[in-house]
Length: 515
Image (cartoon, rainbow, N blue to C red; front, top):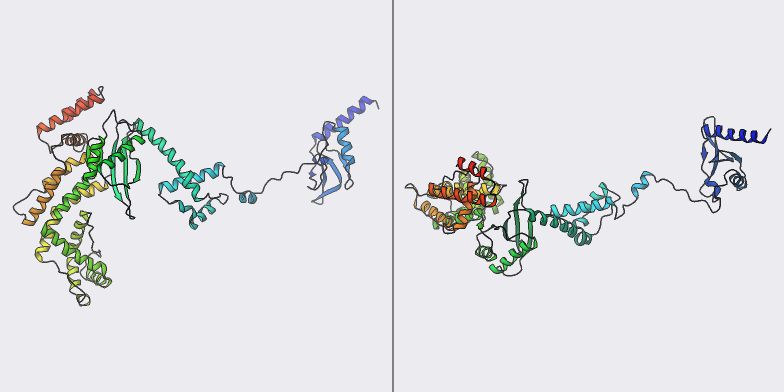
């Protein structure tokens, strides 16, 4: 056979073999160190459907040539590679094969702390602490750690100091930077301050900002809650306000900054000293103070004292409470508990009186019951005159209760409601000939205190409140003002609109038509 023909037949043989389905090759054991085993494996046969590895023969993974193998002898395989695959380097030792991890093994491996998954979970825990006001120690609680181990067994929970020193400060910096940017873009900003004392008798001052975005969304971010260690003087509180405005980069040059506060003299003077204007005093707090003045009338105070003693008795005696419950069932009265008032909340006194009147029959029956009568000391049941006075006072205070409830449940700013509500209260407090002396005294005390809180002499504040009311569609007709004041107010309002938005002439025409 000519040489060229022999070469052609050999090449054709290999081509046919490559076109055929490749044989199944079994991997050699991991203990075989020779590099030739990266290119060879054992022959596999199926006998009667059973897979059998033929360890007497090896197969080349490159050309599928089958060679005889003697245990431990790789000479045939090396010779084959040199002759038929000269480009393959057979120096060195075999690399250890990489095995694919099983799913159970993969799930047992802990997440790297710098992995995206671990960092996402850590940040989410920080957000959870911030939004729900959870202490840093929550990461050490057994229940919390168990929850995380169920949700993500591979996650390694960082230590408590990691959250207090790294995670939360980083979150705060992110949120603060975004908030500073939003406040810098706001055209008008108002502030609210509130001084309060914790259960540990530590004083704090909270400052909240209010603004409207270009999309007409109201934002009410709490800027800070800071401990106040120094004396609560006007000068010191003024410094806190000015420092907060500077820290949050709120512009004071192009617009006034209204500040809402309670009625304490020190914070009112602090706002004035800081140069903020106008100072809007919390109307809910004003109603509370005015109502307390009314409750402080001598006969009214005595009435509340007698009712308070009765309520306290039923709260402290389990036997009396059980007897009261039996009397309620017998008299078919609602099984309501008596309400104990709180000195700082006038409406709790209103609720105490109202509940007492509802349950007076059951209370009287319980107090005269033999099982508890012997334990009663210094408790006097209300006379008919007392009951009549309580009923009259409830009617007097209904308007104040309605205003307090309305202001407490409102989700939107209530500045536009101040003057209409004040007018409503004053109208309800007008004295009539049928009023008793005590009722007249209560009304007079409430009116006197309420009028002094928003004096007409403070023209800037009054003008601001009236304008806010005029811009509220519910009160834009301003029925509580006379024609002259109403006309002057709308003229001032239109001047303000032209000052900030000269192009809004059409809007001014609409306002004129509607008013």
